[in-house]
Amino acid sequence: MHSVHTLNVSQTDPEMSAVGALPSGARDVLPIEAAELRAVEDALRGTFSRYGYREVRTPVIEFAHHLERAESGGLDRAYRLFDESGRVLVLRPDMTIPVARVIATRFVDHPGPIRVAYTGPSFRAPQPGTPVASEVRNAGAELVGADGPEADAEIVLVLWEALRAAGLSEARIGIGDVSVTAAVLEGLRVPDQIRERLSRAAEARDFVAWRTEAAQFVCPEPQAELLAGLPAMRGHAEVLSRISDLVPSAGAACARMTRLLELLTQEGLHDAVLVDLGILRDWKYYSGLVIEAYASGAALPVAQGGRYDGLASRFGISRPAVGFSIELEPLHRAITQGSTSRDFAFGIVVVGGLDEQLALSARIRAAGITVIGLVAGDARGEALAEAEGWRFVGVPDSGGLRILDRVDGTSFVSARPEEDLSSRR
Amino acid sequence: MPLGALYPDAISLLELAGVDVSPLRDGSRKLIFTAPDGTVFITTRPSDVPTYVEAGSADIGIVGRDVINERHPDVYELLDLQFGACRMAYATKDGVDPTPEIIARLGVVRVATKYPAVAEAHFLATGRQVELVKVNGSVELGPLVGLADGIVDLVATGRTLRENGLVEREHIFDSSARLIANRVSHKLRAEEIDALTARLAQAVAAESR
Image (cartoon, rainbow over all chains, first blue to last red; front, top):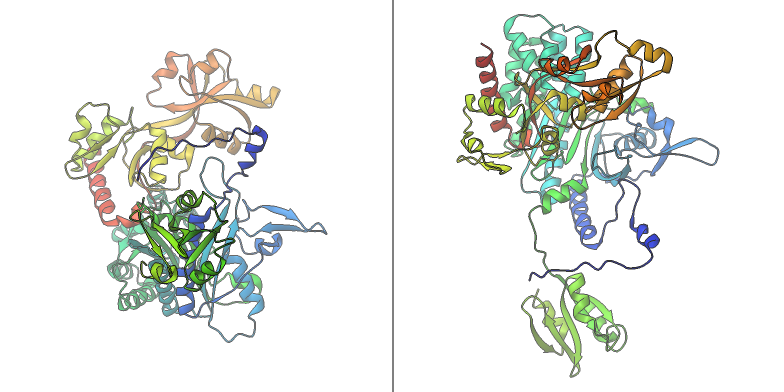
């Protein structure tokens, strides 16, 4: 049903209506979205736990100097505060570093490999002019203490299955490997200075600048072309065989990635993954695999991750680690994009459910059906069902309830609503 | 598609690359055009092109390097299309460059520009303080009417500067049209985007021959 709504603008004190404003980047989550986000999160967690990734939780506040150890310039936009003795604290600006800290400090005796998962918010001040939230809800998994392509493959698989379980129908996972890129640069003996500039171009996703910088380095023809086009290379295993043909010293890195592709193909992911050497984020942080997950309807990747074998050592223990982090809000947006109508929520507003119909309401709830109670004689039954999307409204009638089914507008009298409602599920 | 100076060259290059651009040539005032093959063209002012691409409203876009340097959008920059060549420059009134004197006496130079981020970065990188006056058009007026000491703007032939008695003092960077892609579209539509990029690269090479 379509009707034109006139928004009810409150005519109260203007000072009070300003209470609706929030700090930049912050927002409220209302019931429908909250329920959907919860369902997405539950689906992700379900997948993590089926692979034995056990949940850990870390505090929202951490010591700034602990995280600074591991973040490369990542504390830029963190919110800072002070504790009672003047030490600088931050609201955690991401989840990966605190989880790495937990693994390095609390799993010392664990034989490995360690599988952990997490969900929770992290906080970064929004940059002016960009519509980015200051509070980001993430869900992720980390596999620590396993360094082979088999571990990489499991992480890609868990990510893929988690996204599917959450309801994403169209997705693709891009995989790159910074060690392949590094091996090519090493094998061609590209000097550090040019490498530094190439790294900056790659991080800015600026292939034009990459080509300009690559042209500064003189080498024979097929190799020069390979270098110039390196970040634009993508496809499947053929990309890697071309690289190892032209730069034999990159063979080991290519073989490892080829093995990863074989494993993913065995898992049925051949068409879902795209080898893409343009996925080159922070070289100092990642040491091998880099992954990004894309969903149509989300302008940015819904998940990012990779292998960062050096990260744990910044907390004193050296352990290989691979993992990913999914951003919940863009994922939810991609899943629900295009859906305009909403199903009725299966529940009944019972007039008298707060007083005269207590026993009847209890019976309906015992049958697993939501009951929203009003006091007897309350005239707002249908308005409440309309506002909150409940399917049924019940009014006491000849010892039972007269029930309105809002799906088809019909009504019926029922002596045993717990049974009659269940049959309409 | 960037309306304005880059528009005709962008259409020609796309056509040379085998893209059906006929709907763009019907001279209508529509903002969105759909080609028979289903390609949708969105036309907008150049400074908004990265905004649409970044948000995924458009998969790819054509925009000047000047806009990219000003906005730093989170997009892939795939190809230098080599048309619309011009340079970002700092210019002041004819005669002796007053900038060093102004810096020495007043500590800060006042610059009118449509590119505040670019101008600020340039003066910061050269160790000078700057006070920016953001204007939306005819930047050349600034120094002439005492609004600013100099301007930072795009210079193509230099004719506008000359006719208004301004002289180019510092070269900031060279600009030309670029092909950019949304981060997600670049992967979800990888095959199509790679094919188009390759065809455009050939067209660029053919043009420059």
